[in-house]
Image (cartoon, rainbow, N blue to C red; front, side):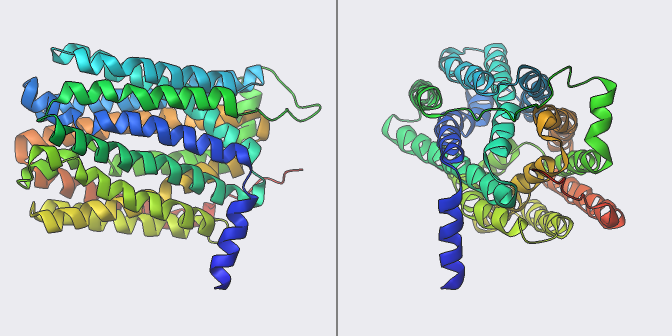
Length: 404
């Protein structure tokens, strides 16, 4: 009873701006996941693409989103404003959704995917910096966990809507893609009307965030977090391969998106509790536990495509995401100076983006040449290597900056 009461008090203390950013993320994720949960199958069954093409497009798209964040994050620090860039990014994401519906070849899907992820990249670092700006330091883990949890609600509501509409409309991919534009536009409207950006601290310096002096101010603890994030990304390739693995289990096409529903329900339910836990627990220990969970997920997905085993593996994948994604964002907020937070998130995602591209392309090659099992066995090997590196550098756990 005491734990429940404490959780309620903490959630009530989280500022309204964090809740608004969470609901904006939720709406955009509903829009995006209605498409992304079906897109690998659409590319393979309707457009005739192979697994390597899926891996290449997914890797390029996701890495582009992460790389663009470095520019938008730096620009938000330079301008001293973050909401406008976040609004631009969400707007671009909403406007690209109809391109998937009219695509007749892989080239337009690639273009739409890239533009959509550019929008994600433009909004990502400024949005995360806004959460860090709005939330008090002692509640940052809970704030990032809450935003991630609401975001992930969208990530399972989207596939659920996709399943329902595919059943109602006889597997009409394009009709579902058209409907996906609606929640995206709602997200843009909520951000525009609902969020008031906090004022900058009096006397806070503004200048070129990426000049040598400022990059040195980020410090070794920050760059340690960047390195850890990159290794984590290498160990966890695009989730498009979870969709393809589910399809191999003999599930009817209309129900395949339920695999992502399972992952994202668990991700959503676990993100806030683990975020709150990270405010009171060693970050390094929590990261290590997250890697162990991902090893278990990869091994289950490699060993069998039976639907029960496969769903267990996908569920563990969701637990891993809930344990680590908000935690890494919190660690960046703790180790970066307030006036360089946008830049800090940008560089973090730049390095992670390059790792995502490498991991997804390698996963696609292994899938096409050796089979699905080898893709997930390789993921487990990367996890073990990442865990060994994490244990070896455990003494370098970042110390939070002292803030006014």
